[in-house]
Length: 179
Image (cartoon, rainbow, N blue to C red; front, top):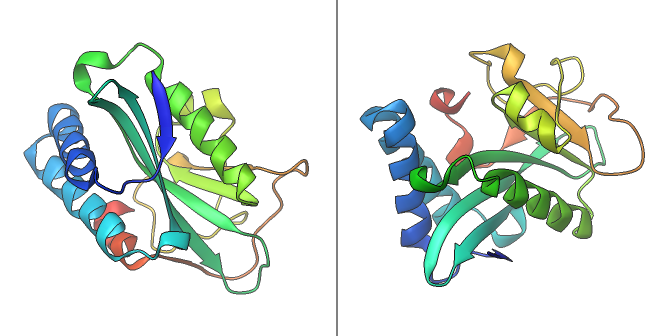
């Protein structure tokens, strides 16, 4: 398994993997929604505001994750949000997602990112250091449909302290359907 950062030349593979993974687990509408999200993240987000990490075996893309910048107006810390995470359906349950997340978090640390947030299953993401948080710690850019899935972690040696100010996300993620 090879892990790498960047999407150049693999955009279509990444979009297709995310669409097929979410279609299989959540249905056609969700697959199409995630395909739109990833297309926007890869096509409209400035390079410094998006980090894509991939897991590959030979020429086959088996997993990918996307981080994009969140901005908190009154906070100096660098914050990213993780969305989405996709592993080929025939390869799920092998630990690829956790390995990819561990790799991605290491990449963010190396880029000086202070905090990473995500919105998902606490049982899954807690395996790589995420903890449930409230909006007192980090206000979401848009209202959360399932507040119990709001998760975060500090990528520094300090505990996660509340982020100051309202949060803003990149345009591709700025839709209620993702929150």
